[in-house]
Length: 130
Image (tube, rainbow, N blue to C red):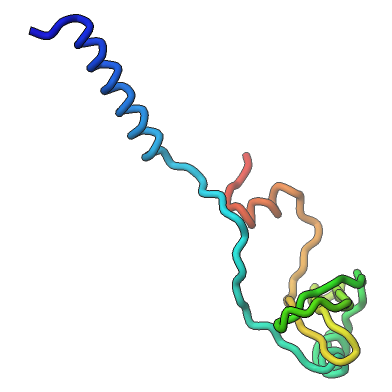
């Protein structure tokens, strides 16, 4: 026959196991450090980029800066970082480069900058705030 102390000890042990199982099976978000991925990036002489994208779509500079950018060879060099946009068509272009070489980081159309913060964040997290 089981003594009362043994029953309480067994109950506490089983409760501990249940808590561990529930905690390990409970849905949670995995948080990890960013990782490096590759995506297609178009690079060319700056004049070619300007002719093909900027002049054709009548893009205007919206933002320009200089940043220290790491190259594929591991060098860090100052590069122009430029965001172009055409407000009428919604077309946009984001490039980085120097006098010898420029790369298209992103290009698109139907740019809508009249969106609230929560909507933007939900695009990255998949969570919709109500």
